[in-house]
Image 1 (spheres, protein in one colour):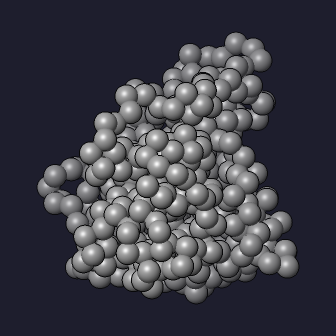
Image 2 (cartoon, helix red, strand yellow; image 1 turned 45 degrees about the vertical axis):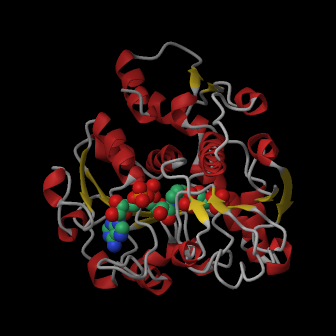
Length: 376
Ligand SMILES: NC(=O)C1=CN([C@@H]2O[C@H](COP(=O)(O)OP(=O)(O)OC[C@H]3O[C@@H](n4cnc5c(N)ncnc54)[C@H](O)[C@@H]3O)[C@@H](O)[C@H]2O)C=CC1
Ligand SMILES: O=C(O)C(=O)[C@H](O)COP(=O)(O)O
């Protein structure tokens, strides 16, 4: 069995070598010729899997993407050729939620503002949106969500789009869709975004194409009071440097990039492949993967409230922001975007971190930290 795996899927050998021989490829450089003898193709979001790529892949039985998003897969085409496929739903959703809460701790006093009675709105109430709602609700923060594909009666948080546009923080977690009754492509207009309250924060960790770059640039020009936190961009890997410069936090599509999330993605795809091939599922994770996932001890650096200092000691998105802004001056910014993602420093989910403080910390502060981590 010939298995082609994206070179940036960590520990791919550990997950997939039990099914056959594993050969790696560069995600954006895969050619139809490379697939002539391939039985199994394991990709990330950067490989467009469509009729053109698979034109010579006559042996292909399975395509797995170690990602939540599926907009890079031509699912209709795969099904027309009876090629099994899967993604990894929810695999890195907690990492994206960590990115959101850490960004809110890192930019001005947004988290404190929400804790003081502000409201957070979510567009796209799926795995990420729901887990974000649960996380902030655990902190006592009011939260509403817009998702036209879910029955509005099924959850009291669901509201119309006008209501989410009145929130102090608006988080976009919709997938990229161009067809169907509610396509998300260029979903939000300038007119809608101008309705955000004074000093609001707009965060996009879904897909860049959900809001046009031109709309965000106009918004930044007309409403400098609004803070932008953008992890995803139209036209990745080449992104608007002008827009990045207007952001409080700009990052190269790494919101989901915890080690835990990446491993969960690979494990889910390996499990789906085992099912398709009719071989038994692994009862435990490969030992080298389990070894890499021991709980990290995080020494809390003194900055602000203890809960804030702890969250930012575990993960501070401003460090990603600095690296990203520096990369935009490179001769090849698209290559630099991919390089930042390829060499991303190991990050762990907040829920796995054990915090070590310098002195005693008040119980109330520890409770806020525990809720920030997503412990119930
Ligand atoms: N920045 C990053 O690193 C990451 C980005 N993502 C992106 O986030 C997206 C969402 O992830 P999940 O919540 O796990 O996916 P999901 O599939 O569980 O949920 C997506 C939700 O969005 C809703 N939706 C679809 N079209 C919509 C529209 N026009 N308006 C409002 N809501 C709409 C769906 O009904 C669904 O409930 C992924 O599809 C992916 O594109 C996911 C992981 C990491
Ligand atoms: O899971 C998704 O959907 C994402 O957007 C991923 O976090 C992107 O990961 P890679 O495709 O870069 O592995």
